Image (cartoon, rainbow, N blue to C red; front, top):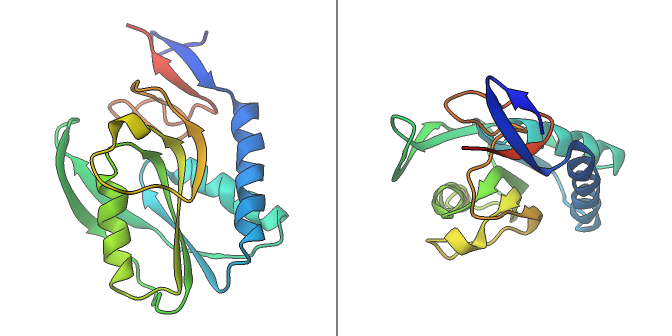
Length: 178
């Protein structure tokens, strides 16, 4: 168990398990034969996952374009429930295949908000990828097309996900011990 910033972290998903699952998901995405693919990570939490998926897609002979969208449902560290668009994409997505990437599908409010926003622009296909899925926490009717892992109902850090802006750099996913 690593100790970082004085906090003990229990590892849920190892660096190796994440790498294996990313390769499998990239193969699944490639098998769907996307056309004119735009990968669209939701910032900030998905940036590490998205970078690894993009490289795994390269190894699976898929060459997407990449843009970013930034939304927030957090005020002073706690979710407010209201999702706000902070930075929109610049590309036209009409008739394109879009892979929307998020770090964790929990309540579903963020992915639902962004997916609805994108659907208004009439993409050919919109697929959703989430590194972690917490189906027991869902508040909206949305499911990801590609899921890395089902996650227990615990607060997680690492691999891009943070606690008060710390722990994003960890190559694994874990929980902070009390």
